[in-house]
Length: 141
Image 1 (cartoon, rainbow, N blue to C red):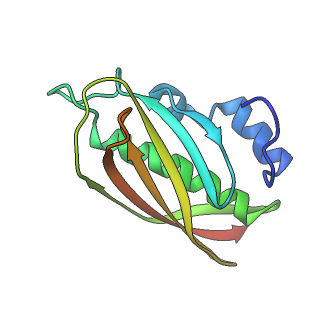
Image 2: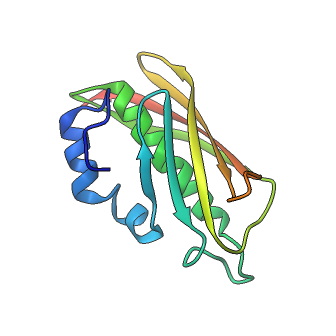
């Protein structure tokens, strides 16, 4: 991402660019493609993020989902407010051992103090690998 996405506070965008989404997201190779409170998209390579039997680690799915859900919630919260995760769950329905996965984050509820997102992670063939649901508490800094 090189330009300021619509609805993204400049200070959040600057922090996102400077940090690459944070140390863990950068280590996992997460790339943010679209960002908004309502709809966000990111990709992550399978290579380097596998567990001992060679498939994408379930925790990597969750990190990808939480990264998108947190940023989308922070965008909704707006300047001077932060999003703090209070609940996350994941259901893994299929495994993958190579390629790139794509996560699509959709807002389920955007309230004044809570934001809930569903993040669906798919393989390169468009098959659903996992579904992550995350709720963030929105508060003043």
